Figure 1 (cartoon, one colour):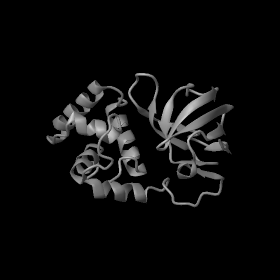
Figure 2 (cartoon, rainbow, N blue to C red):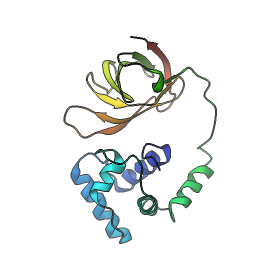
Figure 3 (tube, rainbow, N blue to C red):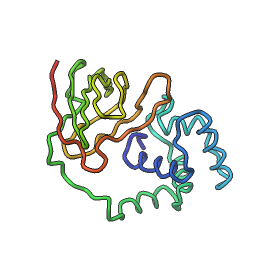
Length: 191
């Protein structure tokens, strides 16, 4: 399964919550590898965990055997049980998007996207290729000018999911804009 899929992102979040640690440094992945071994007597290398979290490059998909162990660690019988449980949860729904949508596939390097979200957040991102963006303006946001991240879609009324957010020499992380109410507005500024 693709490591950028929503199911994987949710699973990573559940695991981080269960160990009360955000995976940001090599020692975090060493720690998680050890805790998985202690609880399950199953081994996942820190390198595999780093790839799963997008901390390092490598394969874009995750082996089923790794998914089974991670699902067990998060409290499920196996990967299939995890998928079944998240599909049955009442707060996870399927729906069509009504708001304006910008698909990253349609962008040209240099295009800009302006977004706003509550309360009083405003950012402008420049497309730098390969689904990556650079923050060029950030007002009232935790994002900083010069930060880079990956995003596939910008959808008005929906949260913006950023993956591999990089700031200076800090390890990459994930970030969510507009968690409660989504993006208030999106605007494409063509190069």
